[in-house]
Length: 276
Image (tube, rainbow, N blue to C red; front, side, top):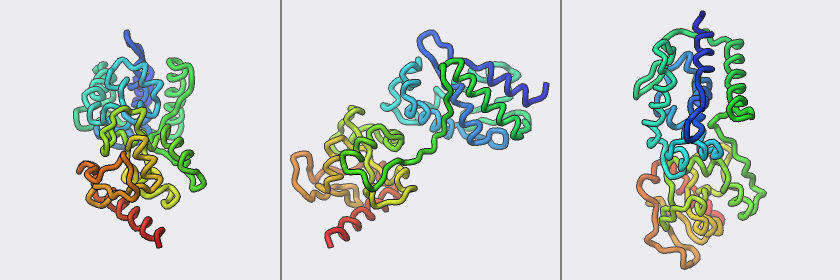
């Protein structure tokens, strides 16, 4: 049996059976194996963790049936919280000593060469789809890239409604899971907004996490209504007084990376130009 068939057999031996839930993680690993081309590259565990986090936060119906409390409550955690969980899933994958998968706590790779020609990749993709149909009763294919459906014709209410259920919002949970201005922690009361308004930025900037913040619904709405703006030191500048706003409110240092500061500076320039 050649290595290509061995790998297919190994993939097909994975399952989602669990006594207290359904764990689709080992099936989802195949998506990142293909996307990041495990047949030619090492894939770092940090990337695997990021991908699995995104898989579950973007597919909350699968997160809810997972037996792990980490996955069930994914929006209360960050990607790095899933390190041990993902490593354990990889060890379960390779419990057969003949497994072609090799892993440690830094990266994963294949221990033997596989000819990843088009026929093999197509067969591999077909097997993954069939396995999801077998266990989930429907076909699924997942990619963690996102494309925004925001357009400049949306009014504020339509924009906030879109963002509430968007993958863009999900990406912000990778960095923060509460409103940094009022410390609201109920994820149902949190939303994502763009620092440089959605009608003032390009398509790539609409999906750039550095151009986004996670705030509570009230502060999202007030930001969109130009009642305050952020300064490059993270503090807010109040434009229109509101009982929801306090000049002491600010973003934490962990959010103020260089790229996000650039978007904040741009947002200030846009407002200044609008006033003129």
